[in-house]
Length: 143
Image (cartoon, rainbow, N blue to C red; front, side, top):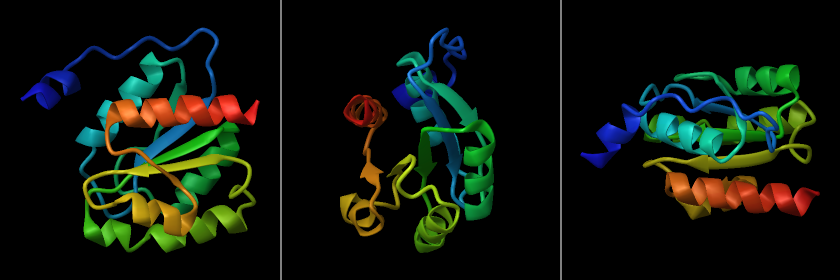
């Protein structure tokens, strides 16, 4: 039950000089936030500022919050196949909001695979460490 211990970890401090801002959340109707929390804390420990939208987040809410906080990254957790069905809507909302080429888009969770990420032009992290590593590399490539 290492994942349960990880969830109980203390909240990491805000980074003094963040590497970037990441908006996190679970795509509607997914309310299973445990895995998202593990990734969010790992990203925060790695030096990213995180803005958490919680569970059941609509595509429009991802877009509006990303614009509001001028985020560099959107990291979406998808643990229900019903939420996976909303990925095309999220991708379309990002494009309509002018964010598709401006932010790094990352997905992960038990209901998605690399092929799903490829279809919508997103990065795919299958673990919290892989998510951190991919994001660090993507941020470095954007400099």
